[in-house]
Length: 162
View 1 (cartoon, rainbow, N blue to C red):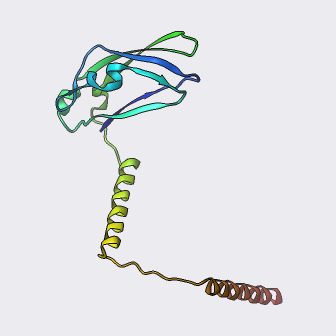
View 2 (cartoon, rainbow, N blue to C red):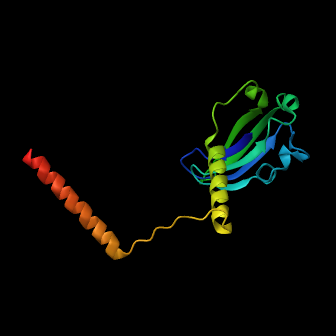
């Protein structure tokens, strides 16, 4: 899975961010890269360190085609005093050729664990699993704390005697 991230790494805000592509590709079935909202219309404002992140494409679909894609992106923007800036970036999927990942990405692991929590809650709410609930009164908690404190004092006293 490949994400696209647009981030303001500068110390000040970026205004009127515009993107110009020197090519295009279908990133998902019949959707062109140039049709993504912020690519097409730009971004009015990005605060320092603010980012926009979105799923871009899956390399498991049309892998051979996608690894041949190389697109230049010209980025124009202004700072708070109106000074214009220009940068050029390249999306080149051939750089991903042969890369593998060991382990599970953290976001995937979190999503899987949230699914498990959802299933557990579903089992509890539907009665599939009945939770074991132990209820203590305030008096019982105080008695337990007092007993633990007495045991601690006895242990401390016996340690001092040795």
